[in-house]
Length: 500
Image (cartoon, rainbow, N blue to C red; front, side, top):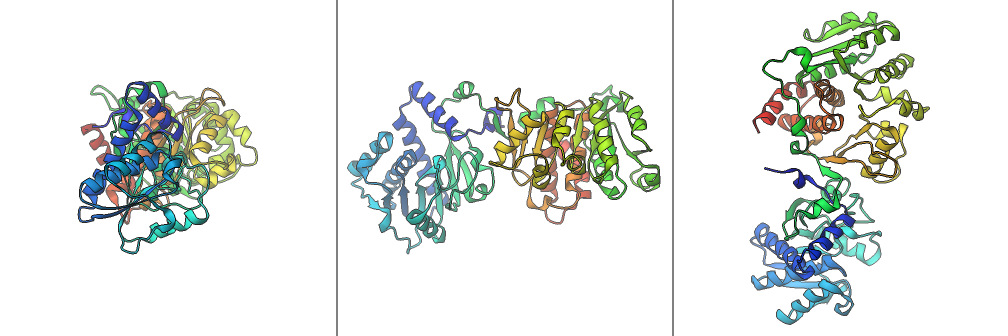
């Protein structure tokens, strides 16, 4: 079973610091490199059992050093190894130079130039060119070599990350290798999970190279891969002596046009464990809303003053507003009232877009118990889209003072930091299948989160849990799922969580 430290993601600088701390703890740098290269070779021999012809591409740094070690182990195992290095061996330094000398002296190995590379026979390629630390675009001759590797039919294993993919951001720097498998060390990096680079990594294997786990106590990482182990301790489970109001009352705002959105959110809130969920709507839409789920309360509310009176009831302890709300004055006024109540609020879609003309007005109303759930388009109406996804989501959380969920295949959840100068927690979620991109799925997510908040789950934890549960429901359904199906899988996922 995982523990919380298994979910840590380390940026490039943090991983370098982990290596430094390992050396300070008495583990030689060339031993760490030896362990890394051996893990690469073992993975190659395990995954490509029938391949005995390998081309190893080595760069000028530690990634290249790992490649020299892997080449040595593969040659000792009887493989035919052709090694090509980006720079002359005399330009290598440190641990990489040490292992290059071992390749030359112990194995009588040859080092060829990259210009002489030929993949006509379709060998396995081990990409040890750059790894995670590349800081500039791949261009010219190197770009042509990467294209040659990507056309090769024999498979590719990348050391750390595919060359050309940023370890911090997942960005593709000019062009990048498309690997079947990547072997990284100690902990994953954000670039393994963030698009567009994540799909180029193939299967990612995290190898133990003897880095002491307690280095994390010094590094104090703040980025994580979403998993139940991170939030299960605070997950709401009903007590034997409880009643429905112990489990909270989630209030969902219903718009006049797209009434299915609020219905989905309210149903999801109940399925996620809320003791009660209700939809508030205009009197003109009461009949339409009340014809839906019999277990959802429908309350006609004409004016915002009546809404405030309704929220004065302490049992109504969470509000979800946005799904199908409409971009209009009523949505804006009811959103302001919800935020001024001080209760946990989930804002989605139109409840954010109504403030696109003046995002600062919204930010002044938000508080730490608020969650925003934008997709990229909605995000751009409120926040700057400059920078990578992880950085801009973190920046948005600091700017708004709320938890921000920037949705996508690589959904990022960021918590507001204590100040703009500090870094808040961020979690990357990757369990959502492509089939989840369907109308109404976001409304169900809002409802799940509202259901968890109504049970007094901590805000950031509820956001992370809701996103993961949403993805897991979709995984159980698979191709052909529609939003309505997601609600019906919630009991299965919740049962599995409690069992585990």
